[in-house]
Amino acid sequence: MTSKISKQDIKCLYNKLEAEARASGYNLNPDVEFTQDLVESLLINEKRYGYWACPCRLAEGIKIEDVDIICPCDYRDDDLEQYGACYCALYVSKPAVRGKIAIKPIPERRPPKKQRRQFMKTSNSREVNDLSYPVWRCKVCGYLCARNNPPEVCPVCKAKKERFERFI
Image: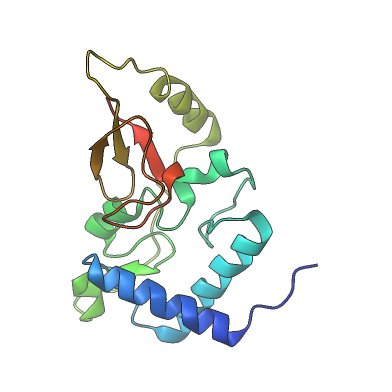
């Protein structure tokens, strides 16, 4: 049985996410109560799985299977661009913050499990050309670096190491 998440823990993570979002040019949903409910769900998922699985998606509970839906998910930027909010509406666009567009339900763009597994097989089998080091790309913000292994934390968006993919 999971223990209850404290209001202090929720507020602390909310403030951290808001500061990081603002520093990176993103916006959290201005509905503070709704957003704090999402933050609580992230904390529940962290206790349950060990990572912030998107609170609005069904997680497998296996990190490698869920890496694309660890918040901020791989689909956030495309959702923001197309719909003005990410799938769970934790992140919203500037027009949504200003009330110029309504936040509406967003269709799921995450591919089915079979398709995701096939992609993982092919993306992990790419060859490194004649470069001295492989190039790693942060799947959250696009940051690129050439080194033997990806950084522990992205210097741009603070995504963890597992959010990097071998790019070249």
